[in-house]
Length: 492
Image (tube, rainbow, N blue to C red; front, side, top):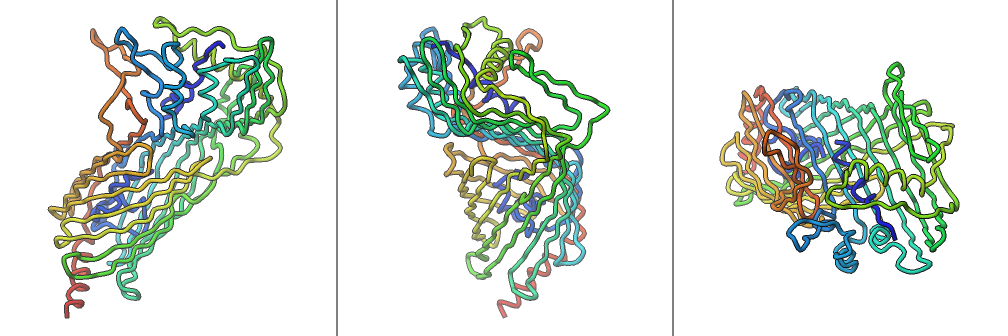
């Protein structure tokens, strides 16, 4: 069976495309950004975010990595899983049952938080978000590795998808401390208005391939749509795609809305443990509507006869750019997508998150131990994560945290450093996933030496976030005094 490299197209898709806060900051009481994870949280100071460098973050998460697809050769170089020296049982035995990879990128253009009373906190934000999701069935890799090992050979693949979404959001949030009614209770919400730039949605519910020596019978049920105002997408005679962009028709691909809802309850103890804090929130619960005028749609359903893939080689001197294009054309020929005229618009949800947390501060609130559950409802499946966090607040203006995530396939350590002064410039930097082993994907020519572009060697789990803000400090003292008065009354 002739081999292909379709896999790497899907793996590299997120890099070609490009959570709004670290999970580790969820229990950082002084953080000005954890409000994005739970709108009930209010910081101790008003703030103004600095555009372009305020809360900039990117990340990718998955249960596959380069070590699943690259293997050491006898001469010390790396060879792909397609090489005959790599046993099929070795390669397939290391793969998870549902390989997947997600991408997230976002940044705040405007981020303002301010108090209108000691119990009322408001936020106004404007940001840009890009997310992507790739799901590749296990059987697909078996097809790539084993091919037609018998005659006939049959493969049945389900739920293959590639989805990418980009949009801007304008948000208004409000948090209120209800301690005057129910002591220790805070609630909050945020309303978001969404403006989509584009969306790509490719889904194959199933692909069944019956491969014989003379021909293949391919049964498919797949669809694709691209939403982008001004985009003209067409098929050539060989089923490859061409495109053009009409600058005069450029505009929003769609509009939508979303809400964040959250609550926190503090059970005060006034002993070694200052309090036990219970919290829960749901964020990004919403949708985007794409009108028919911004859609290009394609669909396939039924049987197609196909005479097999052309030869594709993967030696050291191969031009991978040309190779990827050839594989893409081959895959589109198998899929046999046909253009259809959109009769109506499409409504698609965005990816909501559920957070449930419990925290126990101790040593007079100088440290805390927290446990956070996060469920991220993706476009095709749900990703679950459980994070244990230890936080230290040696001073009012310093947050230091380390955490360990344990439900995701990649068990990983995260960290956070945040400076939150009463007034002046604040700063934070951190990661929920830290990798220690890398492999070079590509060397960028730079002078005589070049620059290596590296990626995690094992599971592709990594995120990084940093930001700079200006702390205004106009309500810091009021909140601190209110909490102190509440504790004093308990002691009496």
